[in-house]
Amino acid sequence: MTYISNIVRSEGDPKVLRAGPSSLTAPDRLGKALGWLSLGLGLVELLAPHQITRALGMEGQEALVRTYGAREIGSGVLSLSTEKSLGLWSRVGGDGIDIATLMTALRDDNPKKQNVATAIAMVAGITLLDVMAAQGTTARHSRTSGDRNIYRDRTGFPGGLAAARGAAKEFAVPPHMRAALAARSDGARHETAPTH
Amino acid sequence: MRALVWHGKEDIRCDTVTDPEIEHPRDAIVKVTSCAICGSDLHLFHNFIPAMMPGDIMGHEMMGDVVEVGSGVNGHLKRGDRVVVPFTIICGECDQCRRGNFSVCERSNRKKHLADKVFGHTTAGLFGYTHLTGGYPGGQAEYVRVPFADATHIKVPDSLADEQVLFLGDIFPTGWQAVVQCDIEPTDTVAIWGCGPVGQMAIRSAVLLGAKQVIAIDRIPERLGMAEAGGAATINFDEESVVERLNELTEGKGPEKCIDCIGMEAHVMPSAPDTVLDRAKQMMMMESDRPHVLRQMIYVCRPGGVISIPGVYSGLDDKIPMGQLMNKGLTIRTGQTHVNRWTDDLLRRIEEGQIDPSFVITHTVSLEDGPEMYRVFRDKQDNCIKVVLKP
Image 1 (cartoon, rainbow over the protein chains, first blue to last red):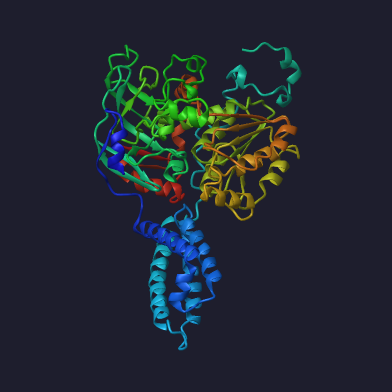
Image 2: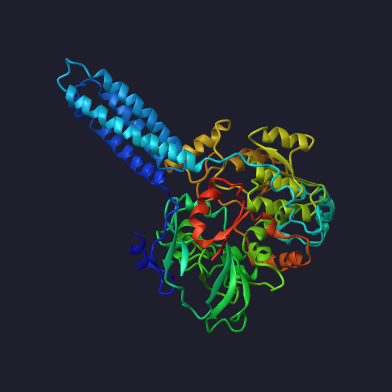
């Protein structure tokens, strides 16, 4: 996209020759991929629950699959947002629910037991990736507790705070930026005062 | 040359790009000596403001030396001049520029047709701030082309360091204008939401302009500490109720003047359910901004008071309490900063030692470290408040 967008730039605008390292970290990229996976899986669960329940021998549970689809989409949107850690941890929680639900279908009388076992293995693998991404983004983006005293000496006033108070009182506010009379303590006087 | 380039959401890279070239007789090329990451760059980093394209160069706070001028600059600027580049590009000749309303210059947005559709009428072109405002390459780079350079510059003397004058291009006049348009009186209490770089400048401006009491609201300890150093009483909204505390500090009447230095990305917290709802709607593209601060200001402001909004909002905001606003007779003043309107005066104040804006710098790094510093600044790590980049 970067190189394609060069086409619309004017002649004198700089154009990218070589891309450098990104502000996105490896966990960010993994989280992004998992977010899109969540959206895709969620859409499939919402739109084709019958195929899923048939493949797993869980006929009759279509409403549940649709609910899980909505959950997946929610997690996907969160994972692709700036609150990605929350989204990825919600995926981890969702993985747990998925595995627990699949376990109920891992019965000898289920003719699709083999499919269920494969699905559990897949979800377990993805859970591992989810945990890695969630831990990675949480560690990378969490704020360490700040220090309220660290900038106490930074007044910004070379002559000191006391000298700075009202030092620019002579400044003439442009007439159209004057406060409404109602907001002025000397409103009556200003009613007739000339603008300057 | 090297430049910080937007590739997508949260994806900034230090790329090798072609050098900018003079396109128009009124252009100049500036070799950037210092530039900075602005809080409003984070809205682009998060892709909350539309019309960024992969390959766009970031940055609208920069200064440096003029290395080339077009034939139409006509002696206003020459090679070797040291200039701060204001973030608003101005022609200096249109009706709005003649009135001093530089941020709504009628001629500098080269993608006026887009802005006319979105805003109703175009605003000024801005550096590195989406194609809605012209798609001009920004100044987080080794070189930047300055359009309408004969008007779009602030000459600065060699006697002052880059760090003292760099912020004349944006955050200092932005904080100043935010307070000026409140029309401060000696009896006023000014409440300022957000102690980021613009909030810090607004605090100092309110002190200089003689407010009786300045109250700063934030939740980040180091920012609150810096606000106190500048003369503000502080409220940590993680620890106490903003409305209750503001009323306590104003004998139950509320502050006369309220300033929003937060804008569209108010902090999301379960204790304020409207922030959670705003965030959910923003994610679903049902609302552009999170206007919690705006709602709170309208609620707590003293009747007849003034609300000033330098914080950036991008589009549509829900649940704005128009009933409170109307019945209390509040005045709202907002807008991008008319930078050049204030800079002669502010430069004089820096030279006279009334203020030294370099106090806000917490990190100075190379351009190559820029992508990482976007993350550090956004995540508020390492006590980071303001990042200056040295190309």
